Picture (cartoon, rainbow, N blue to C red):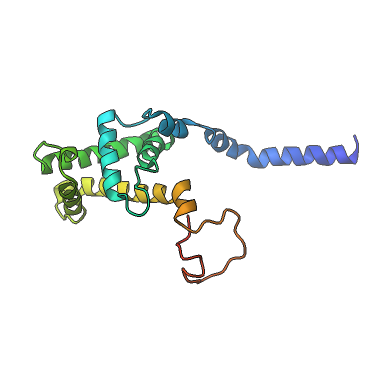
Length: 192
């Protein structure tokens, strides 16, 4: 065997040994369920009734202003896809438990009418009341709402539409400059 072939096989075997633990992650990353969900409207985790509530809440958390709303950029479908296709079973059950507590709170606060049937000002005030609540009965609902807010904001800021059109986006970064002003960054905050 020639020296060149020995080096080639050694590099191949070394690379395979180093990357073997990553194969499961790489192969599961090829799952197209999350993109299919938004394109086809097929839900992976929520029932249609639950998804209507998620869409309402996501739209209330980040409504349309001079930038698109969270529902305009598909954050509601992203949440469904992430929970349905990425979360482990224990995380799914914990998420479901919190979401059910949030849904119960909203049904209780509206005396069974449901938040979807209220005008947007009342919907928002109910969520603000929950956010500031110190009532131990609704602690799980408050935590679930906080989790939903965090997911909504994170997924919103990482969408292509928002990152490229409303934030400073640099797909191939240059030199690192610490402590620059927003003006020096182009007048916009940086995309995640």
